[in-house]
Length: 408
Image (cartoon, rainbow, N blue to C red; front, side, top):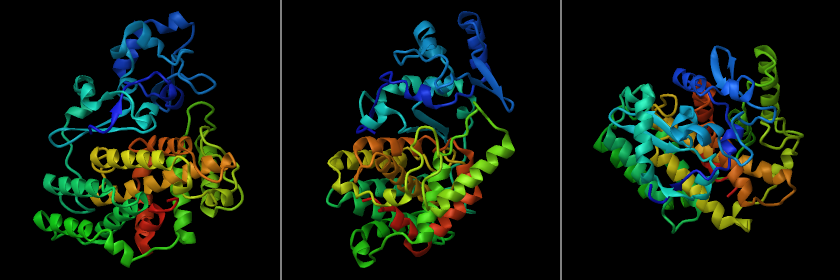
């Protein structure tokens, strides 16, 4: 991905946002570095059988300095930090014959596309593979569709190359490109692919992409139905829900609270419930729906460029299927990708509406993409049958297409 760059610029956002789970080797390193003695307090905490880095009351890591840098890094070097801290913002997953590498767009430097070419990080990526045992155990390729045999490399490569080529087609608006992406993905989700494999499958994808954008003109869509809008809001909730170790109220009270807030999102009346401390709350749902399309924003060009990079990086990094995404099939994972993009739009509009703006600014969209992408591949509840069922409902009556272009 020569068009995407990254270097850490020490903003400290990841150190304020993530709860870092520690491996046995991480704990041994912290003990050998004698941080408890240096800092006069425990630097780890246990929760439900796992050990994590301790966080301050404001949610930041105990090792985060005022200048945004890590104290472990400053005193002992990059390679002595916990592995999870070293790896971010890369998403690593084992493949059948090679490592899958993606990027998390919560990182501000990734969003802003600043830093070194990604090829400059190869040495670190190889080292990560050496110290993370599960990356060295080959994982089977994702099924082409649920219940089918694993997808062939040629099938996956064809889907990725053809959809990426469509997304890069600058003769169409961003709205049309996202509509076309959703059209192809929705069509593959509806197809029975048991006997459409290899060259026949590749021909099918070529045909679906080849009829764009004419097919979209012949099959115009309207705004999402009430049911589809409700499903979208529920998907936003699952992609922003962020249970924290600090202040845990117990499983029962936590579950009840989640249920009530999820119900409020489903209904979409009144004001938004608490989603996460990093997002606004008590915003009128009507104001969110009233935010103008991205094309009316003074930052429309930058917003389109960011969304395009995010979509392409997700696709090329193969981040929403197989070992990178709960073992999901290729067709299910592509649908999840479209839904994630739609959720990022909704969260962007939430941020804009909270400030009383009639349109989104670039910073709103950066927050929207960051909050949604934070969970991709990391939140086990996104890999459940409930999520697959949600996608099945959204395929009905062009639901994926309707939500994909919402906000554009």
